[in-house]
Every structure is written in C-alpha cells, then in structure tokens.
Length: 403
Image (cartoon, rainbow, N blue to C red):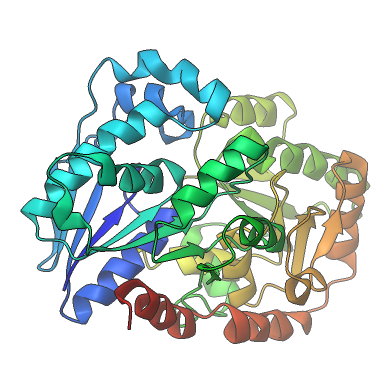
C-alpha cells in the first residue's frame, strides 16, 4: 500500500511529531508499504508564513530524500507571497492561505505517487488535506483513506469555529489525538464524537530503559557530581526553560550539598539569553548546555539514565514526550508544572509545582535530599503498561490502514 504522511515541518528527527512520523514510516516500510513524507522546505518564507521561530537556524535540506528503500521525503517550497497573508491567522488562528496552497501540492504528490492512505499531522496539514476535496480534478482522492492527527493543544472556541471544525473532522475516516492531554481529548470529543480516537504518544521502551547511571554520565561527559538534574526541551518561552535555570540558581543557594549539576538539552531562540544569564550569575560550573541529539543517536536514551532528577516546567497543558521517556528510563524523581490534562496514572508520580520560583527551588532541594530510587521501577512500569511503542504503534497502524 502507498501511504502519505503530511506535516509542515519534518526536520532531522529530534523528537515530538517528527519522532512519531519517523517511527510510523519505519514500521510501515518494514511491513512492505511505500511511504511518502510530504513536508515544506524549511526556509525564511516557511518560517514567516507559519510563525515557527523555534526551527531556526534554517537547515539546508534536499527537496527529495530517500530515508530507506520504501521511505521518500518530498519537500516543497512555498511562494514568496504567502507571508504577506499571515495577518489572517490573527482572526482564524490558522494559516489558511498556507493550507490552500499545500492542498494543491498534496493533491499532485498523491496522484504522482498513487497514494491510497493520507495521514495529516497538525491543523495546517489536515486543513490542507480537507481542502483537496474542493480542487478540480481531485476525484481520485475520494476513495483515499484520510486520517487527521492532533498532536498540539488545539482547542477550538466560538460557535462558528466549532461548526467549521465539525465539518472538517467529519470528513476524515478517523481523528487521532496523540497528545497526552486528557482535557484536549474530552474537548475534541465534544466536537467530533463519532470518529475521534486517543492513541497517546508512545515510547520505545526497548531503547528508553534504565542504563548504568555512572557509565551514562561518563559517556556524556557529566561525571564527577553527587546529583545531576536534567531538563530536555526546546528553548522557547512555552517550555519554561528560564524558570528551570532561575529555580536551580535559588536551589543551589539553599542546598547543603553544592556538588550538583543541571544539564539543559535543547536549542531555540532563547539559547543566547539562557547562556548570558548563566554566565552573569557565575553558574558555569553548575549548569551545562548541551545540543539535542538526533533521535536515532545511541546516546539519546542515555541522557535520562544519566540524571537523578528530571525537571520539566512547561506552561502548556498535558504531558510532553520527554517526560514519558524519562519515566521509561526509570528516573525516580520528576518535577513538573502543575498543569491540567496530565493523566491521573502519571500525575501521582510527579512532584507537581506551581510557577513560583521559590516553590520550584524548594522542590529541587527536597528531591535531592529525600532521594528515593524505588519510585523509578514504578514509573517504568506505568510507561510499559500505558505508553509502550510495542503496543500503541501496531494499534495506530491498524487505524491508519483501516484494518
């Protein structure tokens, strides 16, 4: 079967949506299916159109790329005029001109590659897939199986927006929510109750598992400390990385043991600001910035095993992939923002904190001084039971292919 996976940004795979698409594509190709990943060429026009500053610096990627024999990535350029219509997004919250243009590209590629199943991740992509029905000469897409994927926190408010969303969602064979956010699932179910499914972001528990902590620290060059804290995220405001740094600075003053290290793994527009703050506060010996590893890099799973405490302080609802990866690695202490949408089976194992720097600092100190390794086995079992790739990816594939 020929399958198309659509996403605005398919970058070298670090995590998130790209990780999901990569594993879906790999799994399908191993089953003998041909997979085409349809995405944008990442350049200034794309960034200005979709408003995603966090993908900078702009990578230089080929327009057509073969990942394996059965997986082809096709990247298309956007016309220079599209950014001038970005003001429309202020009123309808989606880059509709982009979706109109993308619908034409999707239609052409689907015909060229004889695609029988199309999965569109994120609103700009699934709106584009919906709009293909209004294109001339697109009758061949009528029988194509179409799946909408919701990964981000896509809340739809207002009577008119909800009616439009209902019209769009009901055109799909299934709407799959992969975001681990119970509030989002209940919200989308009120709009599209017939075909909405929840298949959470999965974790490859065969890769992400407990490794020897001291060996992992040696390999990553962060050995020699009594306690290591880890935070993995994009360096953007939404992820709260600056709060992690400021809370750690305060915790360092409160802690009796000063031989502790915070490792920040990520990239993004706030990187220079974070680096400057670390230098200005004299924290160079206690905070280490590390560039993210590619998802396929064997050192990536070692990150989580190298730490004693994982800290993630986003402002957004729900649970990020990095948290379930840390749980799969058996990290016993996880400090997390007290935000809505976290499943109860996970929430009871998190040390939830408010947005107060003082409260976060106290939580860090308590986690260091009252360290309990037993909880690591329990959080690992939760991931094995509810979020394991070996269970969820085959289920997702059945939905995708209509088995």
